[in-house]
Length: 210
Image (cartoon, rainbow, N blue to C red):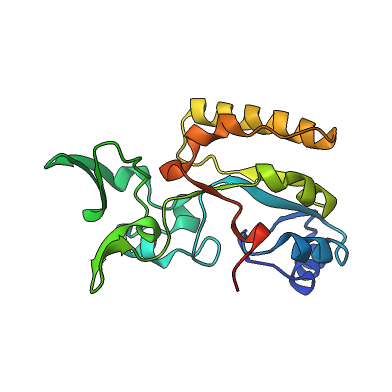
């Protein structure tokens, strides 16, 4: 169940009403906010560690539903692979979702998976990313702080991913978690070539904007 519960009152309600033992927190909280939250609740918390970001309320992507007619919650995927197409046109790789052109990548530019929120569109000020640039969430460098904040588990985005990708990410995070627990330096270099668009961010966990 995706409820976008991000405060102690909401989490306590689900714990009392449904016996919830662990909650996956939305990707909008900073590390200090997570620490404060963990001090007020008695259930385990899990946070997103690697993979896609979402500019919508968790699990409620109206953009994807509008384009494909499928609900990300009901059908289990944002921008389902059945609606994705890749085409070569005038030396560019064009990505489409349900017939809508999402992006066009010149030769040599890393191509992200076609989701509407990370599309490049033409507007009055030119062609640009209007919602969000293709970037992967990666908490490797802030994992020790998340552990100190009381986080119990991390969540790796694996939907619509191949087995080789999942194996590499999980294996890398196994080493990263063990290093963080032992107080050793963290090496996340193995994850660099798996990030979307060749870029990564710590997202709201280390929020430097207001």
